[in-house]
Length: 424
Figure 1 (tube, rainbow, N blue to C red):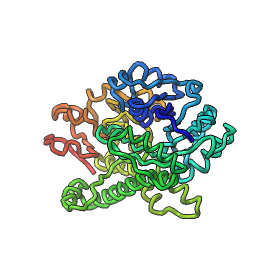
Figure 2 (figure 1 turned 90 degrees about the horizontal axis):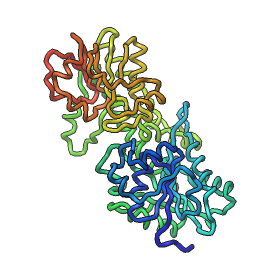
Figure 3 (figure 1 turned 135 degrees about the vertical axis):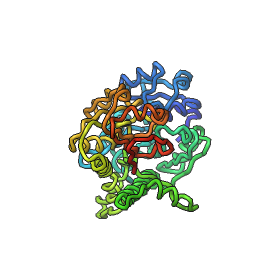
Figure 4 (figure 1 turned 120 degrees about the vertical axis):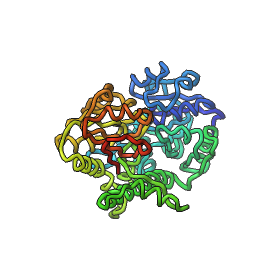
């Protein structure tokens, strides 16, 4: 096959992963960004990125073409699929978005150009070649390995992280043959200053991605389990970690509510594949079970400390600090359990979209909530805006005898005289 010197690239999906990648690629290549959400495309055209991953100045300066119409993306040389891969209600992989994107891309291919279809979505080993490849052949009528080729390059976007951006991280790349791998290394190599790593196979690249987040999930599960153990000994995990962290090879993970679209989801993809192979993934699923129960355990601790139900303010709803991303936020587990225990809940988050919160969790975000007082104030997500609150403001948010439950120990250096405080 003859590779074009500057290929036309289509990035399918303009979310947390696709948009930064498309903008970075557009600095070198002709790039079209496709997202079926018309409102999303219109916002981006106006220079607004609701994910806060790309600055307005960068959007204004980019040569990236934006469209919601797949017909605008026919006959490209490379298609990069960056759609989400969630799980269903039974925690089984939901490949619906990937399959939908694959079918859409298959209808756009020009076999004479011998395009490459690259997947960045997190999947279990085998999905790209065993599911997506045959589906493309079925829909397009083309033959893999002759008319089109497959590649995989796992995404490593960390929402809100301004240091490990797509143009500064090592990009793992795999192609179905050496020539395809060479082309993809060249393309991604022009995007990132950290270079590329050529995986031995597409399956190896898929597996590398899925274990990256499974490893973090298991380590955080250990932190959550020992937090529960130490609470019975009247020990704060933060005091223990401060001491243990002085050892040179101690792994500095922290306890917390494990949500988001990656760490709280990807282990289920790996465990699903293991079960298909007749293997019982005990460690992976045990870690998931601990982390999935953490929100309810925290709620029970808060209720026990208070001794009774009352009004409670939840500060933060997004899945992690300083991002608006509500996907798979486990703060909702804490909220639901407190509600079961009789607490009247008010939710505040300075970054999350109230309409999205309503749609995803059927809850309301009250942007004026910090101006009132409550029996319990729970700092669930340590947004920077909360760190900036003064002592008087914090004390004013608590009724007489109220409890400040600071899950991430955000206010550990504050004196806050007269305030009952609890942390993990």
